[in-house]
Length: 421
Figure 1 (cartoon, helix red, strand yellow):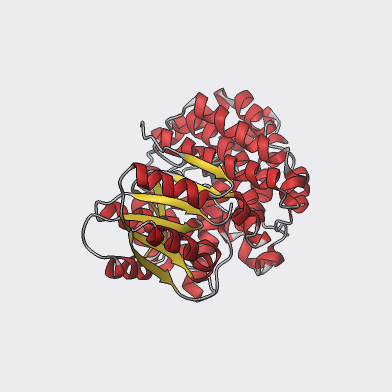
Figure 2 (spheres, helix red, strand yellow):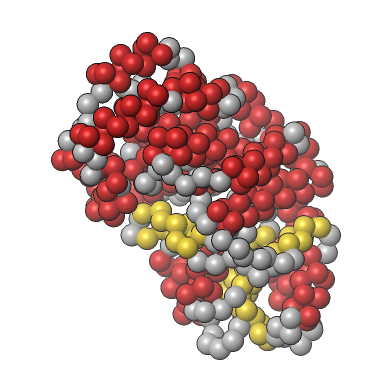
């Protein structure tokens, strides 16, 4: 997939850069989308600057100090408040505001420009919009922005928990890449070696700057934003989220969905991903600890669960949302005994490579130390979770996507799933 986002600017005085761009493109009518906090942080100045330049601007500001979700309510509110006609949308905010704008602009046939206010997620340059529909976190293909303008001073002034969340989302790609390699090996998932290398380089760049990111220095925040943008471009170029989303994201999505179902305030996506990463790294350590003989014994004992028992398990974990999850998971639910035997043979034949993939995942204590360095959560209590909330993210989260992850492998080999204790 070839999509050009030009320019992508991370630096000083992003508003002036944006004004020069829209003037050169002869864009004069805009719909600015923000929330209360991001409008105050940047949106007001963007609106004023555009109007001073003679542009027509309609600002849609979603109210409240709580987290704004990319859900049906906020999508419809944006659709309702947006005027008709040839406007260009401008997303002034972080992840959810960008996803709301991406979806609404795409479905209304209009382009959008991104102006991030915090280095909190990697979706600013991607084509997918994670949307909560009927309580289910679903990534819908939409469109990339025309251009992105990120003001480094605004990014540095973002609440530190957002910066730490961006770090968590970025280092979460460690197990995303491991799961992606596992999926190629065992589930014939599409894979791109050059994109995997780009993603790994982005991970390395932020881990090398952990101290600077934790202190929110200009160099550190710029490095984090550059890496998040690169991760989004990897997804854009690949055409799917596989380079940046594995078991750590699936568990995070499940925790978020359950909080919404219970009417609880949700936590920052990247903060959950970073914590989940430590647990998925522990799962890889458990796989790495298996000898070939023990693996073969476990494979010989492995049996394909019945379709009925798996569907019952999905319904247990998702309740009224189960039907949508079942549709997503049909490729696994429809496995035959012959298919399962073939999968077991693949595991046995590729065990050395599986072990090599697992060995590339740093030990969980190393990852936790890196997260602590930037002030990101490393324990469920920091995410307002109870001990009993953790395990369901791995017990049920893997059903969210038709992907083969370390959780799938662990279930086949009867390796206990981490519980966060």
